[in-house]
Image 1: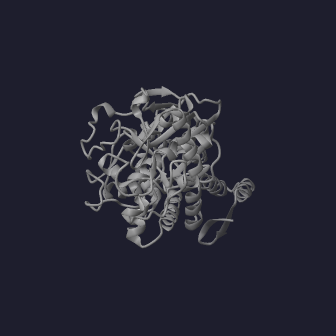
Image 2: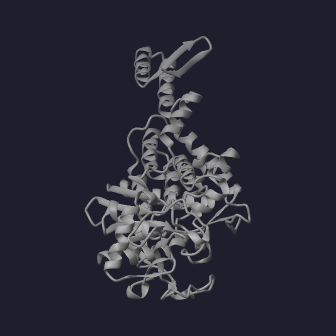
Length: 466
């Protein structure tokens, strides 16, 4: 049985879906005002591993990722996501583009990088700007239920009316105003914006992204989009919600509050959060110039799948330290794995013992370092090559290293003769040395049926793929 660490209960739990063999899963995606970096992609790779493990267990998964293209304010960096400038509008001013062009460009790049890491597509990359009506409807439901109030800059959720607020996070340890100025109009400093009003004309500030609403022209708060979109595609209660550890403190508690206040139902059963990534032991930041992107790594000659391999070596709940030395080691390990599997030949059969141990590892809260170790044991094991190859390719349904395509490419480019064919060729040579030519000829026919041609000449015997 699959076991997952549930942030809501702060313990590992047996996974039990709402509907047998069907799972609804949502991942908080990027705000598309800039390039996603390797820290972001660790989160999305962890979600992809969970998606693959669910499928490996036989579940039919409805998977949704959002693209935040409005409403995420710069105050989030300081601890209050309701303050500051809209990230999309700010990027548009900086780049001399419209906010819509910024969103389209960085959204497209994100999806390209997503595919380079061999991440499986969701049902939809849901854009906040495509779901304004759903967000307005959710705010109206909260208003009708008595959870909202209006202040100068928008409509806010009153957290004091939701007793369970903050159960997912460590909010009791956070002091209001510790990092930002306290907003005196808020009833409680943990209250958050559901709908922000566009700046008055007197300010001279003109937004590009704004919509009419029952409360006047404006735009949605950052948190409302994920509740509205996840419930649209997955229902008012669904199985799994994933994201980075940073979202556990404010964004996800806000999602829970507004969803459950509106529906009266439990929002999500399992919350799965991935840990942060360091670079050379330091936090990632623009000031340290260590926000590496997939493009940065490709520019240095790295295969993005080497980064995926590197992610697999650390458990998703453990902090990971990225260095170029570790990426080099991952690159070499991946090259060796591809070469070894290519030389095993055509996959056929299975090594069940190793497949079972692999299955146990991935079902143990996605223990990918252990799963990788089992896979490497199988590579070195004294088992039939074709069976090893088949089992490793099955494991790769979860690892996502694209081994089938890569090993086929290597065999074609290098003309590698699989171990099983070499063994048959040696047996044929032994039969010929004993002058058992009829049996040797039968062996030649058998080899040819497997797709290889034998050429005997004065210099010896040459074999090549048909």
